[in-house]
Length: 333
Image 1 (cartoon, helix red, strand yellow):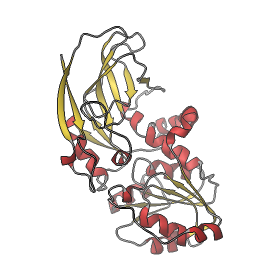
Image 2 (tube, rainbow, N blue to C red; image 1 turned 45 degrees about the vertical axis):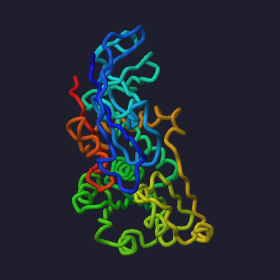
Image 3 (cartoon, rainbow, N blue to C red; image 1 turned 60 degrees about the horizontal axis):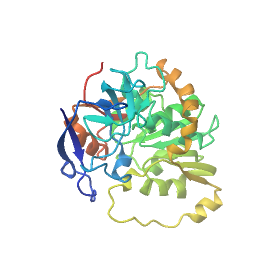
Image 4 (cartoon, rainbow, N blue to C red; image 1 turned 90 degrees about the vertical axis):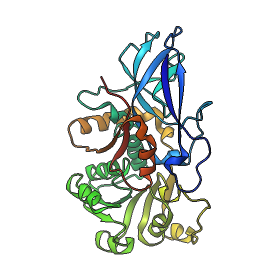
């Protein structure tokens, strides 16, 4: 028998997420597999802010949902040999039993010297979200781009993609250290600690003629100030997330913005990354060479040990991670 540990969410989250909202449960599963079955051990697991507001717990244990990079430890399925890596939305668990392998995905590119963790970060869902969400903005060289949550898994990639396309990039993050990383390592033109400077004062310096493209990870007051005060005529906005609101118990109310959108001829689009699933290879074709050449940089905040899942998740809402938050559950190879 194999002892499987799960992080369970017994009840819906209420207000601010805490580690006490999650419970560790165990079960035993047989190592004697049936034809077609694959038993895998989680190597890396992802924690992402969207898990606060989307999706239901999985199965009888109400396991927290999410994606993992796993290694095959027992198999009776020729498509997944022993020791190979696979991706699955298997949830927050140490081990996963696939009945037929159809819910597993081989890693779709050669890792070479890259860590398997990139499949959950810069070359996984966050990186793809940055790529397609930025593409929706129809960016042009010479334009001004603002991205908030700029030191996170998505925002840090958006800013670099914008630099590659010749835009002036302005990032907002929650600490001086993060802002230093954005300007010195990622070559953002400006980076502001939103806890120390107002949006008005920052953009008075960095974007006196207005902002052409805005990639929004934060929502709330930041979004409304951008729409009502700082977008240039014909500006475009991609709404990727709204982390400032995820712990709200009631919807916040803001002044109407219809006239600002109308008079400035703004385009505002929300998007879901799965809409672009058939085009993922297009993004990888462009991004993988940049990552391997060190031209598209990334940072991972790695939490060592499956027990750290709640700590890693709660930390997202306190700004404790720089780049992608990843939990390392076991060693590979």
